[in-house]
Amino acid sequence: MLSLSQPIKAQNNDSNNQKKDTIKPSRVPVNPYIRLGIDVSSVMRNILEPEVQQYEVSFDTGIQHNWFATAEAGFMNVNSERETFAYKSNGYFLRLGAEYNLLNKKPDPDKNNLVLIGARYGYSFLQHRSPFFFVENEYWGNYTGSMNSSFFNLHWMELTGGVKTEVLPNLFLGWTIRVRVRIFSSRDPELQPYFIPGFGHGDRSNPATVLYSIMYRFKL
Amino acid sequence: MHSPQFGLIMSFATKSMIKKTRYIAILVFAWGVLFSCTNQDVCEDAASIPVRVGFYQTDPESEEPLSYAIDSVSVSGINNDSLIYDNALNVGRVEMPLDPSRDSCGFVIVFPPVENLDLPLRDTLWFFYERKPNLISTECGFVNFYEIDELKYTTHRIDTMEIENTSVTNGLDEHIKAFPYIFIPGDVEP
Image 1 (cartoon, chains in turn yellow, brown):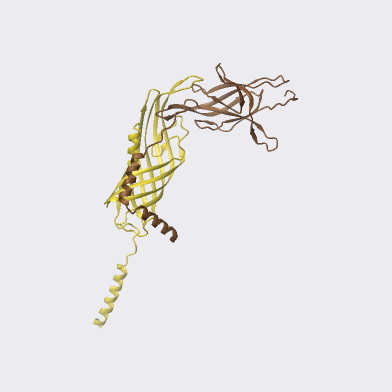
Image 2 (cartoon, chains in turn cyan, orange):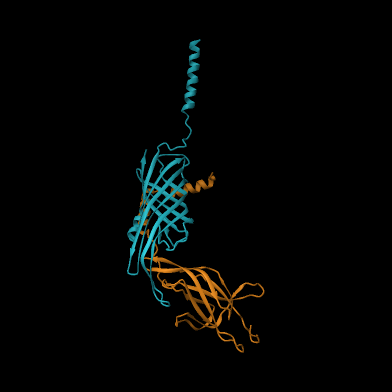
């Protein structure tokens, strides 16, 4: 009796093991990682427009199949002085969002090319002042003034689309097109901000920009 | 869920696009880095941010404003002898610079005489505004934008004025519509 039960029990154990061995596609990436990047286009703009210095880093990680959580942060400094004006500004920004990969329905750690669409919430804070400025006016006469330090903050939403490509093991290059829409600003500023950290030039309502990034993936 | 057709298109497009992924990506990246730059603003007219007043008459049927050109007009600032417009002909709109050193300024508009009518020739406009310094660019420097709070005017030759846009910036918008009295031969004085 025992001998007859053993094969059945063994067979049952085998079937149970087969059930346990049948693993459903994981909803969490098999190899968790964090990808750290820097915005190279900011570096180039800093060279071309040296009076405006902005630096930005990014973080992203997979949170689910084809979904990524992203965070970007940085700071900005403007120091411009000419014969007719001086303008100083500094601030920081933060963007949080998510992206969806349009490629690869199944997670495959060997396929690391991403075509992404996403959205972000952005927040920026800055402090700026103008020790002196000169306004030319041929009819009424020129005017010289100054503006004390004041604060400004802005909330906005971004829609993004772009590509990330693994060019070397764990080294990625990528670009994103971003359309930004202002949601809310602190108050109507007395001194218009020249450059809003993380957003762009202050005179643009809904700027569209292209960002280029280099990233490295750290496997956890 | 994407349709199969969309999936095929995206798959084909992305596969063909990234077929030589590393080489193309590096080229695109290098190009982007080299040409990632901000546009340079033009400084034309940066020193003058005028308020624009257009002249209109009301269409009696549709009651919509229609552009109206005044035969000749002269405009000058109050306490400023210089003429902004000196008997300019066929004028449909005037542009007047606001005073950047004060929060208000005034202008005198001189209209042409009307035959057989002894009418005043001029009206006075007073603008009250907030000044908003704005750094256009590091090359062009600062200009003042303005936010119009109030407009006062006499009604000798102007019937009504309507503020359409309170923000006076370096755009090309018209800010105010002016409706002068329209006189035809045979009219009596108002």
